[in-house]
Length: 334
Image (cartoon, rainbow, N blue to C red; front, side):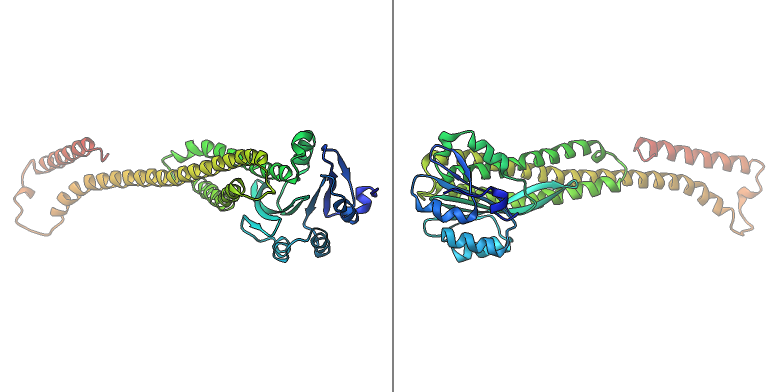
């Protein structure tokens, strides 16, 4: 079963194609050698990693592994919600992936075909390579001997672990915005940033929450493809997913509260400005009202002919304004 080197044997969309023996040893093979490997039931399994493959590659894998038409159709279209489907003696999974691209979160999908002797991952869109996950399991030959289901765990663990730094970045951004949130003046940039963060968290919740259901189904699954030894590891990934979901929900609530607090503070500040303006308007209204009396063209106004009428009038205006000023100060309108 000698095979040509991987770059010569497989197209560029085939990122990885290897067979793992029962003792965990790896051997790279070409797609044409799949049939020869499957013909010998020696406890080995094949792990293939694809990135946005064309229809020809998917049709070849369908022929080699007997994959279901509906699963191939889903893997081809790559617009699926995270889910788990059982097709005979195989499982088909869809998982949402996330990656920070140009300071924004981009989402992709990973479609996984799991069988007794094969594991096929198909990546679409924004997704980090699973090479570190493969390297990790290759250092654990005893666990790799559990079969392709342990490789599935490694892939799902890599997907969920990649959520954690993204959520951590959201948390740091919210903490950095706290001072701006409590600012009494209206800052358009702050409100826009808060809105952008909440929008990104909403998108993340839409993508991450179904992953919790997927992992729950795998943990509770009675399929022989997932032995009890692997369910323990899947349960750990489920715990991480629950923690990510809870953190996202808390951050969304905090952002919603922050938007409300910022709006309330700005409204309160505007109210204070209106109160001060109203107070000064009241102070100006008193002398204006008194002066307007003397602007009327009446001949018989006794106070017009008094010797000290002008001084008395000034005193009355000053007294009224002073009393009104003291009162407005007391009620904090000035």
